[in-house]
Length: 380
Ligand SMILES: C[S@@+](CC[C@H](N)C(=O)[O-])C[C@H]1O[C@@H](n2cnc3c(N)ncnc32)[C@H](O)[C@@H]1O
Image (cartoon, rainbow, N blue to C red; front, side, top):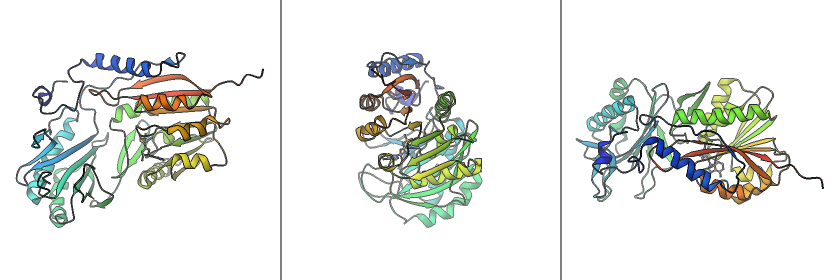
């Protein structure tokens, strides 16, 4: 992918952009296999490559400049805004939507937040695009001061972007490097973005997590479903389930599937998808994954885990390791270092198959999914 911002060193977020894409992918495969080299019997499936451009479904745009001339992108090393509306990671339709959003900021007179001066209101635009081209726009604001102007300008924006399905304001009053605050004010009629993935329709609300690369997320869920169909467990836990991508793909009429997730918003979305699909034997519960496993009276045959970068941690890894009823674990990780650490805390399991999926092209990051089977206990 050619990028004029990278060549001019205005934006270096795609750290590996100077490396040809096939070489990026093989370097990731080597890196991951190296971190998991303590398990030489892993059968590695071919890595899943990404499109080189237009794959990212989410834009996090810092708003700088002025209300008359907003800049959407990042802040450069000198503190000045770099406009990245034409960033090649986004689809043409997502790029085109930024134009209308910038005009909306100008017409409503929303003042960009000035980090150095600690003045202004609008900090970020967080935009997500669904596979159908529908959009979710979240405006991260310092306060409610410009909410009336924002509401007044909204009908014109909705007219210009008919696929703008969800609009909300997130309040982040503090001057710190946290992207968003706790309070979200919904401005649109609907609060869910429909995210069709494979043969499932997932739903996304403003404050829940969604994988940033929809095509690779689809491949990830298909991989998990293939392994589940091969193993045919009667019960599954999907820990760290988010809006339910793994659980909803692995459900079956006679299979009990339970999803656990900290975010109540994400669980509400998962429940909506479940109800629309008419999947009765599925339960989604708000809670901490480790606490849930510690307190549960029964164990499923198969557990799926897809934790944040820090991994599942030793307490949960040990709990799973010491649960003989759990015969298989599918571990999907965006950080092979924490994955390797967790696997060392699960000696009763053998990682048998693995696959790298390039969720984050042009960076050093990737997703890896591993199938673990409980080792046979020798009777001698
Ligand atoms: C990498 S995301 C995976 C989400 C989901 N599996 C998917 O495919 O979209 C990790 C999820 O774990 C959730 N989470 C973080 N800490 C948690 C915890 N202690 N217990 C349960 N869920 C947690 C986050 O809210 C987030 O939704």
